[in-house]
Length: 250
Length: 243
Image (cartoon, rainbow over all chains, first blue to last red):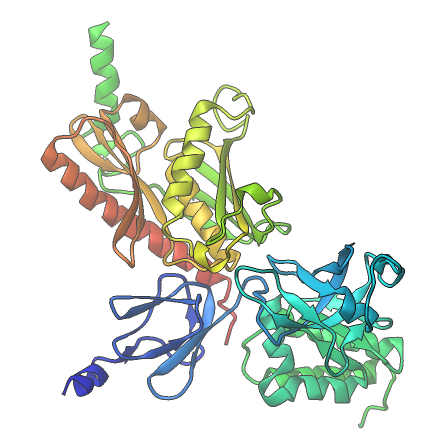
């Protein structure tokens, strides 16, 4: 009886894709609300803590996706880091987060490493850029990075653009729909990292590269517009005709 | 001399109207705007009538000095400052005793709202700059800081709305201006998290009777709700184009 009563008292006060603000009551009772710290629950009443968008995740379950903010590191995230300092046994990377990324020397050198004979500075310099994965992170220690994984390592070509980190899921799209479309239309190799840095390389021409950048900037400035993937595809098609990369029909 | 005093007092509230034409329970015109500074992570410009306050938020970021970092939460650093041109007479730009105290008071009014536990070992910096002072600068500063924190994407339990209640010629009034603050009998600034029904700041300068105090609290909560709605409107306005 108590569980029935609990279900009856479950209420969700926001609709799918509603904008929520800090202090907005989003749900009460027996509901599943994901994503700490973007929701604050007290006395079985859950409030949004950020400016975000409510997303329904099935019956009686919602989550808040923040619209603003900075990058919060999470294990398994792929990030683009810029070397800030080179120490004796590790390099410190700026990963656009409140915490610095630690990249151990063994990851960079890739063999048994002896700092007394072979200083790390021979292998890495401040300003070097790495595509890395967060191997371990808890709130006690800084994020530990690894280069073990597909396509991870030093970035030696292409360009990097920075966008608001909360827009990265939109750049990737549902089941990679947006990123696959961008790659197909621009013929560039695009790697979006969770910390809001995007690597663009291997474009056939500077026009293709410029198109990829402007498309990503449009996504950044107009998130959560319904049918954005189609709008970006149309933009790229028009842009290709305008730049003379393909012949327009009619 | 005593006649002059009576004259001054009479001017503050007359026929139920205050010196600026408001009724006792009216708030000055509010104007809130967010994302006014490009370099800050979050910012807001807040006006309560003639009082104009700018707030900028940076972080969470490396605290710079490891010794001030806390292992279990972020440090909230707050700086309240009055611009030299914000008052009738030039204000010395060096931090005064009052500004140092208000920085602490404002920090303590914001701390219950900010979920600092999510970002251990970091610092969140809040800068509050009073551009024009006409009473209620600390409450306007709290409102502005709260908007700037939300704009920066820092998780908060609720927005914090600031409002002052005063007593002028025996009447409780909402949102006092400088004139009423100078010559009134009491000034009670409050900061409130309206959704949660919690008060994060309450100060009282002057004398209120027991019943007046509780009446003032009710009036302050009512005023805070109006400020809160205006805060939400300002934040929502930025996303009006979202479909």
